[in-house]
Amino acid sequence: MKTFYIFLSFAICFGACKKSDPGIMPPPAGNNIYVAGYENKVAKYWKNGTAVTLSTPSFNAAVNSIVVAGNDVYAGGYEINNNANPVTVAKYWKNGTGVTLTDPASITNSPEITSMAVSGSDVYAAGYERNANSIEVAKYWKNGIAVSLTGSSANSRNARINGIKVIGNDVYAAGYEFVPRIDFGVTYYVLVAKYWKNGVDITLGNTDGFGLSNATSICVVGSDVYIAGYADGNGLLRKTAKYWKNGVSVNLTSQTIFEAEATSITVTGSDVYVAGYETATSTKVAKYWKNGTAVSLTDGTRDAVANAIVIAGTDVYVAGYELSSGFLNIAKYWKNGIAVSLTDGSKIGIATSIVIAQ
Image (tube, rainbow, N blue to C red; front, side):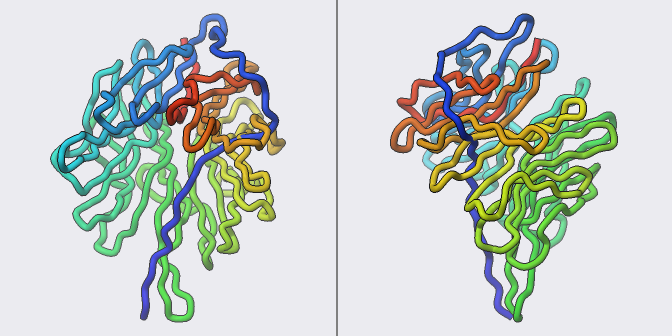
């Protein structure tokens, strides 16, 4: 029997009708706007448009998730040191002070924090880390103690957590795992969306043929579990943006679109908001969907990416980036469709996460 692997790379983007950029706007009364990301490989976040730098320019680092709990700001991501043999460590910063979660001497584990949650005095940082067999293991750290969700068997395959939520005593984590498929005596591995509740995995989509799927974000409201992501049912890389509610799939785009992804989800009342992107011809357009109806954030003249969405009262905030020139990007967020730039476009700037807090 022959075996081969399907390796896929993923880009996250958003878009549609372009608005003028008024620059940094004051935060809403009584609220602060925290946006996390990086600029030129330096981990940072912006509070009301003012940058807070977390890493040094000599290191390669990024923030993928930000959480504000009381007076404390938690920013999770990774950092690569600048030694002769560079080492990646999964870490988060609490009020600017770094907390390293993985072995700073290992050059093979290549870990990363993709999502964070704080529940009471407990801090959860989720992502992945390679094991001794070079397999990416989906895991989270609770107060620095690792909990592995995959990788317990010798034939385990790559897996990651992309989002984590903690509700009471329940820990929910969404992501993917490569699973084996066999066609005509040939074994191949396909990316499959799933989530874990207290360590028990639930598969979400596209488990046959070459169809791939990925869960990118999770929101839990009462007994309902909402998960954003995408799927490709025909193996032609025509990815459909979608979300699952309690395991039932809701498509946001059509498979006639070459590529679309849902990257973030939040629910307020009876309204479901999903951020993502959809390609227009060859350009990624940043957008979000409210109850399935698309709202475009860019006009399609330049690639744009939206990575996170949050609702504060009647205001809709979406964080991401838009191409400026060449390979350079402007980190930005949109408030009710109006763009606010956080960087000037002269470097690579990405906004990955957004929180509105007192």
